[in-house]
Amino acid sequence: MRFAMVGVLNTAFGYALFTILNLSGLPPQVALVISFSGGVLWNFMTHARLVFDTKGLGRLPFYFLSYLAVYAFNALSLEVLLSVGFQPIIAQGMIALPAAILAFILISRVLTDRFPWQQEV
Image 1 (tube, rainbow, N blue to C red):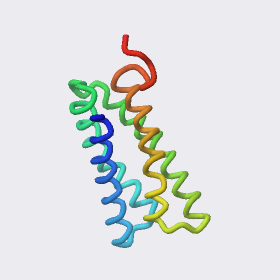
Image 2: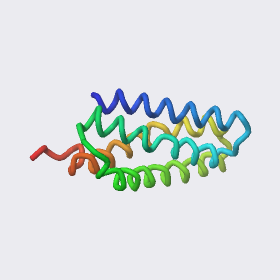
Image 3: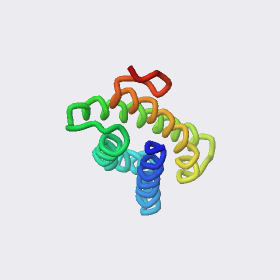
Image 4: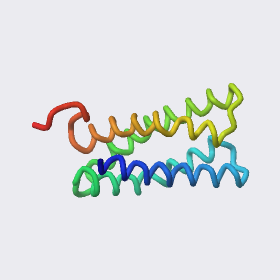
């Protein structure tokens, strides 16, 4: 439940930043890079401390790699949706939930050493 609440906050922040950047004239992929880059450290701190009770920055490199995978999924999905005619803000909104699910799976693994469907040992 905490992951969902923090995830909604983090996703809303990232989507709002993307929207503002795109509406101010930046191309969608540039807005995406900036919104992801701005969110990685903030999201690590909120996930690590508020959700998974992880201390320190030792897992940050792996967290960053997880976010890089989520970014790649997001960027490719955005490009596909743009190529079939969706507006950037609508396309990014359509990607938000699948990207959040992927992030949950990868971040759970990075911060807890297990996938969300695995039992705690």
